[in-house]
Length: 268
Image (cartoon, rainbow, N blue to C red; front, side):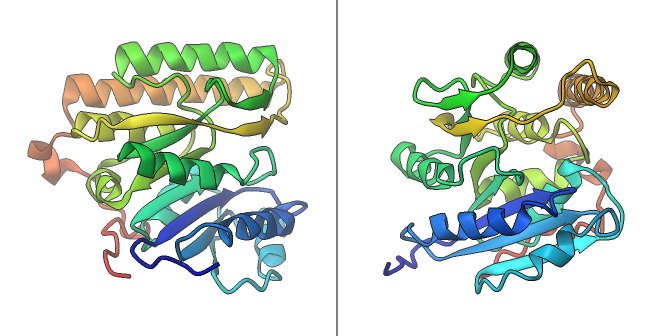
């Protein structure tokens, strides 16, 4: 396909313990992006090179538009996303979770929705009427809880904030990324709530195809994730509504993480 060079797309893929599927992930995502009309880059961020062989397996993929990045220790999905976004160069910056749960064709869908709506952000949504999803009741209950927090505490008027597929205009990330603090669980909520707070309110949903694979929440690790996500979400509310930490007047208080290089490269 002849690419339209008016825009450039960056796709960030955070990966943790995905050695078994990461090569298939990357080839599937690249196949999808070859069909879109814009040039692109894929940035894989391995969240803990020492954890398993994800980084080694990914380096075996010889894709011209792929960059494989990572760091030794595991820091969490939020850290990985921020790390990759800060090193992206696209006019549009998307992310999709690794692990083969979300159909990568959703990348084309969120990109089309971004242009149709002239949006600031498009979120892949399990609750979109056209979505095809397979996930258990306990996850639906968690999603409902996240919906209550996001709408009534954080002012985000979308039905699903947690699905691992989103796309942003670069201008949004340039304003939002330096203010972020979350390294692990509620990064989606923090990005969306801060963007909305800063006036980037054109946030819409797009359908996805998802086949959910997750341990039962009766498992201790599952309960830990839910508990930490709730704590992180409440911390975002506290910083947003009580401390006003994210406001421009508090710029001197923002923590600049040199290892994340939050000064986004604005050149192509």
